[in-house]
Length: 346
Image (cartoon, rainbow, N blue to C red; front, side):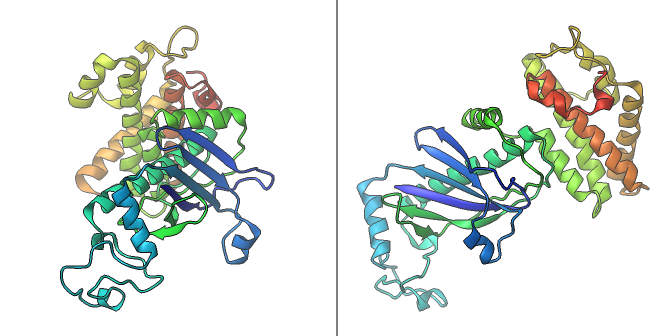
């Protein structure tokens, strides 16, 4: 059985000359993800030039029983007639004998449980891999983008991989990206390897995007989530470099974040050290972290704080700079070019 999920990643801004990006991830289901520009026909029906199409496909082995259920749908019949007549509005398209109005997309709950389990496995895998591929690509290229999702064009199934039919699914997952991607073979290899190994964008970066998205509409939330992004990013770094310390940093109350960055960070066994060790950030940056941790605490405890939007954007950019620095110390050599100049002395 072949399955295909198609999504639109808003404002991904692939270059005009960019060939489709194809990530053959392999695995037992031969998963493949393609990211491409909209076609002329798609632009003609209203899709925007800045929105990329993301298509994930897989091949799953189905039992004979499952195959018969899909064949039944093609013949406009339920595999099993409903035990009693359905209520309106379903009764308009499914009669008491299980005959289906041609073109009607049958909700999963009217199908046998084995079929529901099989199809759910297929589309959840596709959407998960599709989502992680876009997140890793955006992270790997340093592309700006909001935390919230992109829109689904649907999930489909096919017997032969050529003639596809719509599949009704109960749920969805979304991603949204923004930026001007410049993708070469090295980036494609990195994205493919990270996703194939089960990886995704680090949680600290995901939280940062959420904070940046909220900075204008809900600056108080942006402060809370932004400082959480920095804390989570540092804990991810410690847990990766010092596995035995994972439990401590996740369960024991730790010193203030600015002290951890100034005193503990230089002691970590960085995979990519600078002059033999991980450097301490400039004192002025540590003071900024200290001050905004205080703002975060005021917001969390009372909900009241005066927040200057320009200063908020500056501190969120600083948070992202730290996250790139953490990525570098974790062994991602390509992230050093993302570290802002102000943090390079670290």
